[in-house]
Amino acid sequence: MVSRTLEKVLFASRWLLAPFYLALVAALAFLLIKTMQEAWHFALLIPEAKEADVILGVLTLVDLTLTGSLIVIVIFSGYENFVSKIEARDHPDWPEWMAKIDFSGLKLKLLSSIVAISGIQLLKSFMDIHNISDRDLIWYVAIHMTFVVSGLMLAWTDRISAEKH
Image 1 (cartoon, one colour):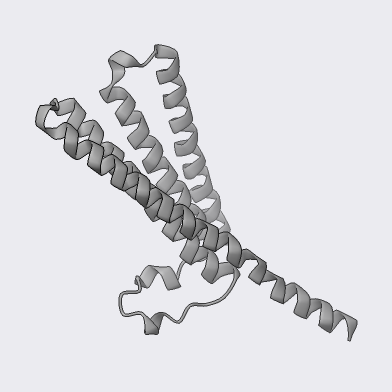
Image 2: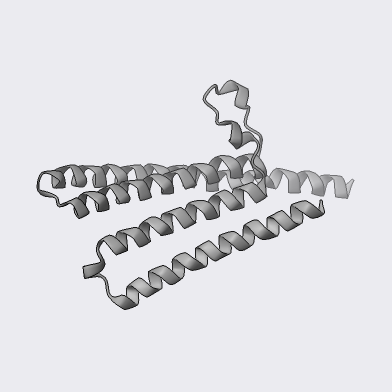
């Protein structure tokens, strides 16, 4: 009787994660506001912008979009994996991959997104290389390579783990 009650409490505790996902929804809304600000700033800059400025503006918008996509991946995949299933058939636009991603796939998608975001930040630094110190550039490359190597190692360990099963 005691163990049954404990199991029910533990199982119900997964709902404590729901506010975390709601906080991520709020973060997505804040990111949308920042994206609209950047798009407005970019639009005002266009008439007298140089090619490098346009590329930097586009990269900033791509970076914000990837970050928003990363948040959506965490919200839906995390909710489905840890809280409750979402009835996908009630949503005709539901992406097929979302109902099939497991925790391992979620980790790989997250790290892939982080590598992409880091790569865009690095590319933005290269586009503005005259205003960035060598020391900062070395740190950007080192951090990016750390993400790349971490992603490769995570994918490799997941592959080894999957082969054993």
